[in-house]
Image (cartoon, rainbow, N blue to C red; front, side, top):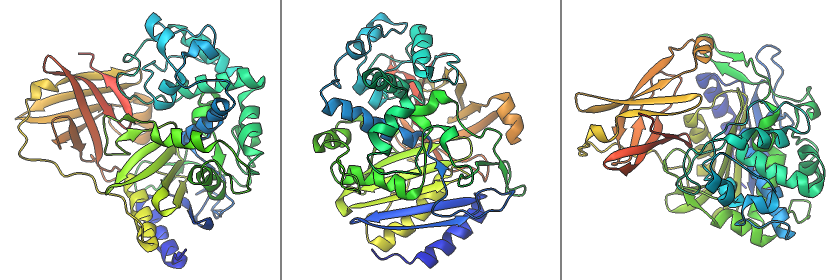
Length: 458
């Protein structure tokens, strides 16, 4: 592997200053060889430097770990991906009787169950996932099972974890350690905040303005409810150990088989379309995002907590994986710039640009205008002088902390009849992408952005 590490380090240092991100740790795996380096500081207040041993929060990248553990159950013949949840989770119930009977593990892995994230306050104890399921017995449907893709931040993968708990007879954090971390020889990867060596942990940061610079996050960790979907912490080298499993048909770097080759193929090849294909990728597999980079299939798994971010890309055709862990952001343009510099040096395919808007499109605004919302998220699409606009309603406390208005308006630039670019409203944002789709009687029923789906409410 040939990477000019001093040059890339210097480039990353400049980008960190430009974006107000305190640090980044980067690891590259190609043909079994690893190159890793870190730039910046773990905490802007202590100024302690980040190193390749610094532990970062991986956010929703955790879901890929959980999917691997669940596929072990499939390998063992203890569950089937397409059996109703009630077969392996007796008494599973949500508000809709049909969904209660129909939802399968594959729906959960795909994020196509349609179940609302309505699980109340399940606490922070070892019974948190049992409580989540009990609390979600009256959770409504955002959409019918399998109808579309809509990301489940916590409940879907907590349900998978509960199935693992019942089969293994132990709490989730012991399950994931016994099934993955210990067999793979991982000593820096954990699933609970209490297990993290605080002397090695990066501190999360938010940014309200480039002039002020990054500030320490007010929320050190996500609640335990996000455990199987967002609470793993790790280093670049140990994230790349997980990448190795996926690139080597289930084999860990230490020679241990983690899952069968058949299960890895199922994770990668079983897919559903993503309504907004541009921000991450056009399809979702089992615990993985599927990207199309200039005709080459690339797999992704990403995560964000409140102040830390993780990006992993797997390029099977070139036997390559790249991971980026930061304690600030996220900024897609930062990750794209860093990855493209490394990918170009490796001689592999690079990340495609977002599509250009199509000025020839003549859309009927009345098809899109309306309110699309779920608890905690509200979008309003309006029309003015033949143009479409989207207004995002922020939580007032969040808006006050970030120094933003509680309503932010964006112009929607059409790429197609269902897809739009959303240019940034200030210098701290990147261009976003939105899908407004699934027309009934000429009216769009859903708005999909950042993997989340929001049904029309008015």
